[in-house]
Image 1: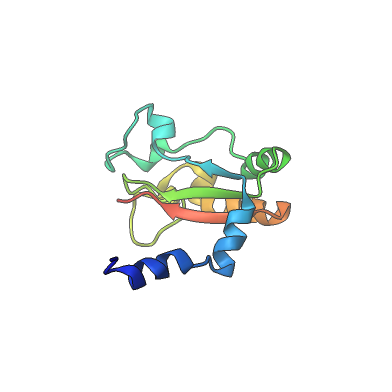
Image 2: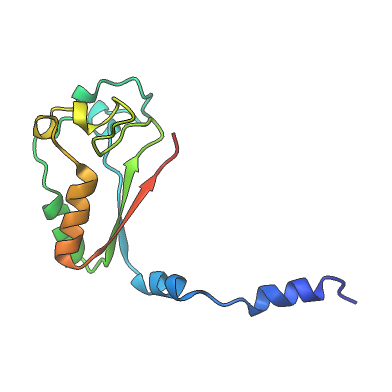
Length: 132
C-alpha cells in the first residue's frame, strides 16, 4: 500500500543528536547584525564602501553581551561577514574588513571581542556568515 514505507519509517524514527538537543535547550539567543550598513544608513551594502565608514564612536561588546545575559539569553549569534563581504575580523584575504577601519586604530576584532564577552558571561557564541 505504501511503497516508500521503509523510507517513511526512517523519517519518523529519527531522533536528534546530543548536540541538537543541547542546542534546542539553549532556548533564548540574541542575534547581532552589526556591520557596514550600520554606518551608511542603507538597507543593503554594496561591498564598495570604504572601511573608513565603519567607525563606531562607542564600542563595547561586553556591554551588549551583558544586556543580553541580563535578559536571560544563553547565547549570541554574530553575523561576522555580511552579504557585502565586510568582515568583522582582520581578514588577511580581503581589504574590506575592520583592519582597514578606524575602529581601535585598525586593531579591532569584533568577532574576538564578542566571543570573549560571551565566554565571560558563560554564554555560547555562534559566528555566522550571511553570504557574499
